[in-house]
Image (tube, rainbow, N blue to C red):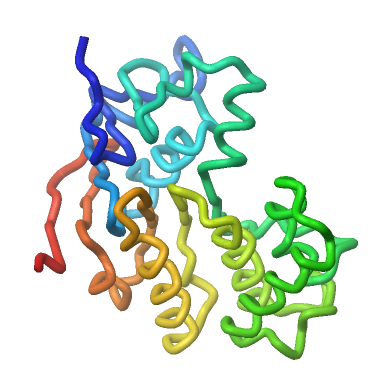
Amino acid sequence: MNIPSPKLAVRCRSLTKDFGSAETQVRVLHGLDIDIPLGGITMLAGQSGCGKTTLLSIIAGLLNATSGDLSVLGNSLTALSKKEAVLFRRRNLGFIFQQYNLLPTLTAAENAAVPLLGDGVPLDEAVGRASTLLERLGLGARLHSRPAQLSGGQQQRVAIARAIIHSPRLILCDEPTAALDGKTGHDVMQLLAEAAVEPDRAVVVVTHDHRIFDFATQVAHMEDGRIKSIETKNQT
């Protein structure tokens, strides 16, 4: 039995994903292999429809692979019970999705504080920590605004704060800079880079934004549901 390396955040072997059934079945991932190391940022790049977001969703445990082996932080998510999987994701994973998924009745600071509240942090402390992080992201004047009162880029920054506030070991990001200008995107990636340099943490980013490639430890180029090549960057 192969034991995943403790230095890997994610290990995929022969991963496939099918959607539909019978004559409507479509294979999106084709026997995909990839190692995502701890201590850095891995970017998944490629044309729309190549399987990047599907792979990210499988790593997050939001989709099940059709076949193959997947280890996340040394754990097989399929071997966990539903309750164990939920607890594992809550403690170890942070998510940044394009849809933002903010709670409409909560303020920006309250939305960003949700992971801390789930861990039992008192409300005032959680909101205070969230406010400090949002101020760093340029939202100091919008702490008490609700999502409907925020622009798309502002909502994106709240979603980013929510994903990283509880210091998860693995942060998964789907186009985190898509709605942001160059400076704000740079600031966001700087925050993610600071999270990723910890030896027991990693960040995975799905992106089309070539402006942020310099933040990557490695860039995995995808094509037709496979890893076409892996470019190692920022070697020291």
